Amino acid sequence: RAKAAGRGRWLCYDAELNAVQVARYTLAEELPTALHRGEFGLLYQPLVEVGSGRLLGVEALLRWHHPRLGTLSPDVFIDLAEESGAIGPIGRWVLGEACARAAAWRRRFPSFVVSVNLATAQTYDPRLVGDVLTVLADTGLPPGSLQLELTESAMMAGSGAPMEALRTLAGHDIRIAIDDFGTGYSNLVYLRTLPVRVLKLARQFVDGLKDGGSPADAHIVATLIDLAHVLDLSVIAEGVETPEQLARLRELDCDAAQGWHLGRPVTAAAIDDLLTRDVRV
Ligand code: C2E
Ligand code: MG
Ligand code: MG
Ligand code: MG
Image (cartoon, rainbow, N blue to C red; front, side, top):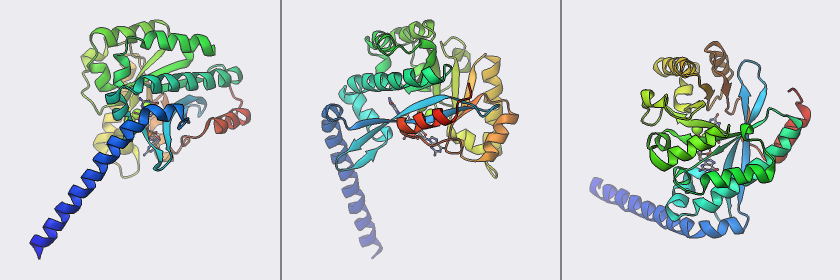
């Protein structure tokens, strides 16, 4: 009986795995046309100054409104887009859309910053610098209002052309942020040589600041905030879900935060609303 149950499980596992592979294959095929069909959209999550509670800007988060599968998170399709090359046009669309929105928001709120995620493959695209500067010129968004988020592994792989592109962008006053900091292979000595201005602390560590959270993780957060400040970097804590976490971050002198406690990712119209109601500058 046990053997039969075991075999049943394997069959089930195989079937599921197969379904996932088929789904991935289909998604990869659908990706290039999804853009023309207008199936992509952006949500915007508030970035909040910890000390004052003031809105600093937003992070743009991509969604694929798939006709059969519903709304998909980029975790499901970004790597497929990178493998197939579809990330080029999709990434350019994200930048254009986010910067156009931010240019309008900045007219009401001059210090407003928009943060855009870059896939590793985009940093290897020789067109990246030209694309970003063109989008800024076309939308009228000042470079100082744009932040680009890269993962640690993208930064650490960074010698040669990608790093040169990031240096050029940083030289134009665009803010470079390391996303999910602490989850990759951090080389703290190397960090000093990178054109980075912002560290985004990964939610896994920020979870340690919850009531009953891991004291070791809480300690890591405190240490990383101090380290960032020694290196003259600004720190954004990700995944702040409770008021206790925000209070702890205030004690630890963290610069900024984002998370469900401060604001879920919402549509551009909802940010319009927020800015009309909240006119502190
Ligand atoms: P990320 O850049 O680290 O973005 C934060 C993720 O955490 C988002 O997931 C956001 O919805 C989620 N989040 C925010 N606050 C909380 C919270 O309090 N608790 C929890 N549990 N989660 C929270 P999302 O939108 O599904 O995006 C996943 C990842 O996909 C992003 O992680 C980013 O790496 C990537 N991504 C998103 N948009 C883009 C894009 O336009 N281009 C590229 N290349 N990657 C993108
Ligand atoms: Mg991000
Ligand atoms: Mg992140
Ligand atoms: Mg992430």
